Image (cartoon, rainbow, N blue to C red; front, side, top):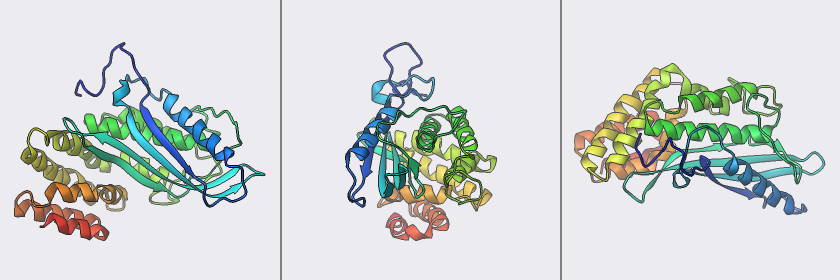
Length: 295
């Protein structure tokens, strides 16, 4: 793990996440907007001021992430929010000003209850609040993915905490936590990611970012070659080993532009065709991006 990322020492440290939370309540009429402003402030404080792990992050190493929450329904009498959320996390690329998307997903069941000026508390072993469970889940998932990108399987402990939280959330009366409910729900994502059959996909996180993108400042050719190998041994193998998993498709959805740019007018024709075949075989719906690879 490189010295510019984590320092296990006693110097000034900060929390792991630097989250921006946006609450879009344009669809809700006739409600005092202060409740939405209070929700946004409460959540940013909860996510950003909490120490989620015992790891030491420097202030400039915090993981930048965004939660864009759209409120589609709000019941003032029961304090019930019906929402969708777009969750994105980014990772800086070594020796460059470029940041790469580490994770991006739409959660269509981001529903919870919140009363204005509620003090929200979190105990990962006793999950009795949907709102804190949602943010705890994504906090652990994002931190775990980030650690996996800096050392092979480096996020194991944190990702196990994410899985434990998911198991402890089974009694919540909200959609998204249960097995077999949906192939892209919160349970499916963390359960698939930790599945032994998806180990190549986890290894992909390290190979793609650390030996691929991080290497490109020193040698674009070597970085791209390493990415090609990572796609063959990680992404393709994971898809073959566990074809029902949605993770490779989700990953290619948010990586499509980056992947197209890595190979567009670069690399050998043989390399381009091999990468195109892998990506088209996993996610044909993004073929407009894959076509750019062949050019």
